[in-house]
Image 1: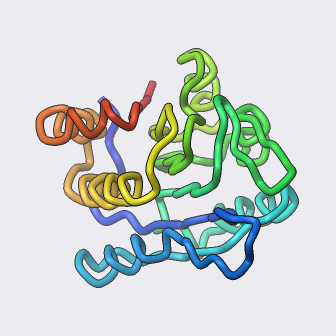
Image 2: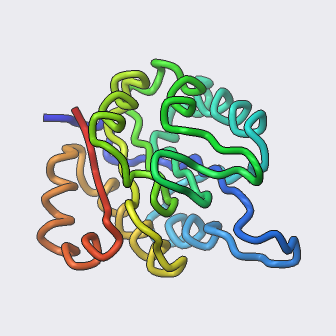
Length: 189
């Protein structure tokens, strides 16, 4: 069984631009504020627009001072096995290289469309390369609000359970139809 070190897991969120129009204010920051106000989950939220930006913030996340931020919440557009950063494309393998093997006891959530619509072997390779506790996310195109609602439920469940199998079972028991609709996957070794 896979266990998180603590119940309380803070969130380190990296978010891309959802629209080419910079006046559009769409953001997952409301998800994070909701969890702070209602569950006392601390968070750090940063915008990324380039591969270099992403690599920089992933290195920052791994600093000791951020060790309590055990959930990495990636909020970008995606394609199967990829996240999109403006004109840049980052595959799961490239993302794992950026992280390195330093993700012990960390949960990585891809709040992206399609990213986990890929071969399970690629996802498990990602887990082995990063040593993450688990990786989760969506396997199809999702509506923004539905995805955000599920992200709130997921972050809440991750606060409730240390055992990743318990999180997976709770999703199946309580939110199976929504999880299926979003093609949600939770994978651990």
